[in-house]
Image 1 (cartoon, rainbow, N blue to C red):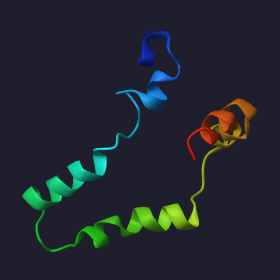
Image 2: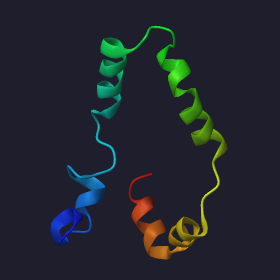
Image 3: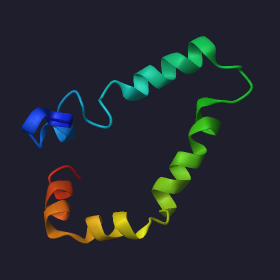
Image 4: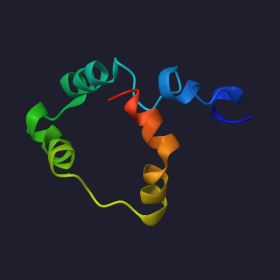
Length: 79
């Protein structure tokens, strides 16, 4: 059956979604418990922040999928 068990929206909003609201808190807790103390949270997040601001190259398959109207409509529901 795969992800969502027949419900294509389950992977967008359910427990199987790529990220959940508690993810940042969990990452913060991991840093607090197991971090070396040599890098701050900001230093660790800087590469992701740069990618979010500047964008990144995608392969042809992802570019094609993102160009589909159905994909843009789904993504538009969750800006």
